[in-house]
Length: 185
Image 1 (cartoon, rainbow, N blue to C red):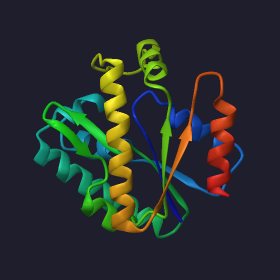
Image 2 (image 1 turned 90 degrees about the horizontal axis):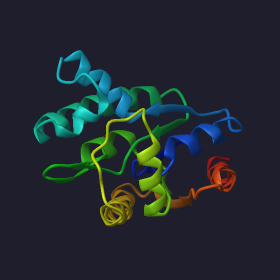
Image 3 (image 1 turned 30 degrees about the vertical axis):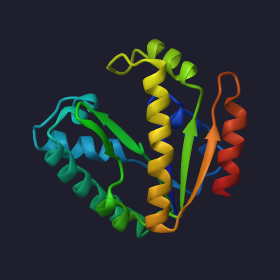
């Protein structure tokens, strides 16, 4: 079983996932961005994660493919949750987070979108001192979430996976966690 968990930056994807995994123990979580960062750092291309989306698209694609190969090898042995983004907003537009060559390797069973209201996401991003993010309007955050929904369905059409939306609103983390647990069980 491979479950892809995605969300717009600031939606709380990793927070919901980590809380759910306190109760559901039989999955190994692989953060796709961490694997990509490991590859990019090993090649001397970046120092921190938020620099990767500014790399030339051809370089980003090559890094994605290398990371997919590494994750596909892990998935042969264990139930995997791939913690990633449906799309990455680049200066030249949205880049699919899981392009065809990645999906062909991973063959996910379920794609989960963690979402929140755009205003909530903007507030979370503003208070997150652990990341270096470009400022983005509520309308642009909404656009990104809409793009992620469309991209998730395209992934599902290509792979046969189902798509589930989990809403993670402020002060309702436990509800989002319970929804994710139901999907994983």
